[in-house]
Length: 445
Image (tube, helix red, strand yellow):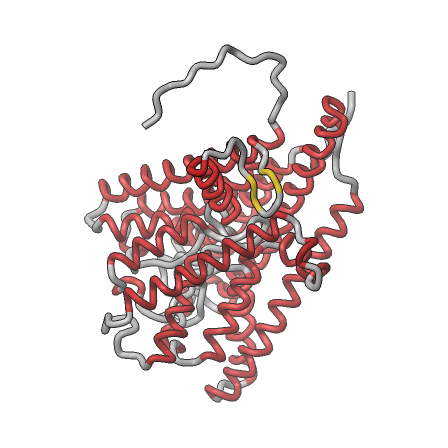
């Protein structure tokens, strides 16, 4: 009997590794050493924060710089780093497994079931993820540390602490900050705001995209369909998000209204990009217009690139569904994107991931409305932020009842791993039917 290799079931490994990381993080954060006060953190607080860190979300129920000690902050950012590296590595392994299996299936039919990764592929992939992550984090950290030293007269130790923490959090799309108001105090400082945006955007694109851009930057014609779809869709959503926030909040005195035009544009851009999964904020999210909150919720649900640190259903899922819709409207029998035909099984997988995500968000929002007194827009925003592992909040997280906070823990875990494992499971379980039943069309619409 053949021995089963771990890479034959990477989706299971993904769930087990992240569950173990959350458990270890919860234990460490529950130690008295992890808090500023004499008492240790309650179990739910430790569990919530550990899950938020490992799933690179950034939602909090306590004030990070006030509640956690230096040891607690080190544990926190360590969990963020492990979570970011882990999701990029294991999700990329899943992508390799799926592409190898499906590629072999097209070539060798039934014999494709024997296709697996070899150890060299995995080693090269892990090394590439680590080098890419450390490079972006190092560059971002140098800029931030220099700014805190020169612009804010922080001592070396404090500047290094602040720069490293926020660089790691930014690239890994985790909205944790060592300031009680997140980054609101720096809303007018482009040397803080823009590096955070760039790092978060790079991490959110995904390792496969970053690797291919590095190798084929000068030959865009050779870019894969995945890279083209990710870049085009991400760019379009960035423009739409920036226009939405800037337009809706332009005259809101609680957000952009009192700023000068350059600051309005910069912060509008910042908050147009953050819903893609980063979770930092330079203005009070809870004071935003209802239209902005709804539009931001939609962006958080879509998320960022596959095999990256961003969450959501992923931009490729959204793009595939959009192209399917366009093909149907035009009356085309198949879906074509950038000179390639999208297989039917990919279309079905995208539909399944999106609809399951919609169901999870709706049911969770209904539950929060039943157990709390918060309005619909804030409950929906909180749920979508947790499911999209974004970390933005209107400020109600800490005021939710324990059952509501426990729900957000489940949503963060499911939102981080669910779309990835579901898509991989659907792809790897696909089988060829030996017969088809008679066709009959139900009435649609």
